[in-house]
Image (cartoon, rainbow, N blue to C red; front, side):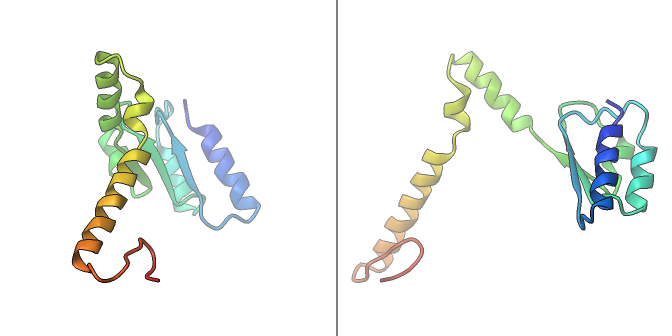
Amino acid sequence: ASGDSLLSLAYDLKKEGAKRIYLSATYALFTEGIERFHKAYAEGMFDGLLATNLTYQSPEMLNAPWFINVDVSKYVAYFILASHQHRSVTTILNSHEKIQKLIEKYVAEQKERNEDEECTLFSQS
């Protein structure tokens, strides 16, 4: 909860020659404060830290140059909706079908524009 293991990992990776290091935390509690993160960032030990907004984030942390907020509120809403509708979360979060429909729509639009030419997604034959 203090974040010490993240900082220890960053120091180890840097020692092994890592050039760019991005840390991640689901819950950025940092129970002993963020001063050590400021210091490690200033020393070039890591390039950024991504953390979800599932817990309180202090204004100091949100404004830190190394902090990257990952907003997951949309997904929390999906989980609540799925629970309310007695649906599997997988069907809500699986974007394969949505992406496939977007591709099909794109291809159809391209065919309409170029009725005499064969249209494929990535190249023209």
